Length: 163
Image (tube, rainbow, N blue to C red):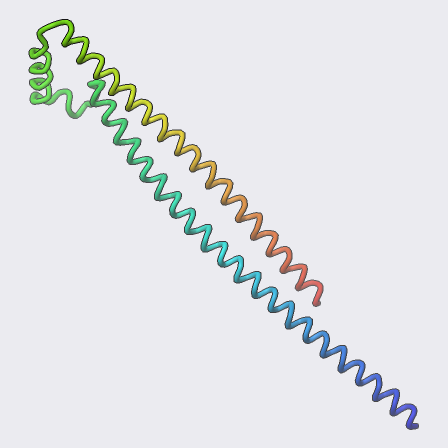
């Protein structure tokens, strides 16, 4: 009889120890899950901050490109808003009237070509920067999605293991 009581007590103690160990393991897994969640939130916040910065940069680049295009059109004389303007036509005629020699005309032409080339180069640089920004954003988004998927997968596996 005491043998049965000792066995029963021993089994009860084993079960209690097992329950205690499982509770500790569950608490540890919940803690790890919470840490993973906090980490994913941190990464999400960083990604959103970076994405917002990229959007701002892209918007500023678009504005710069628009400004450069307007300037280029103005230099090329195809800006529909200023070309028909009588004041602009008068200013252009005055500049042409001031040119007295072929040398002055050549100098003015060279200056205009240089300005056009500079503006074209600036436009190309802005377009290249825009493409690089788009590529970087796409890569960052893919990395963030992959990281989040891995963390969720690890969290789900941890939850399945405790079940």
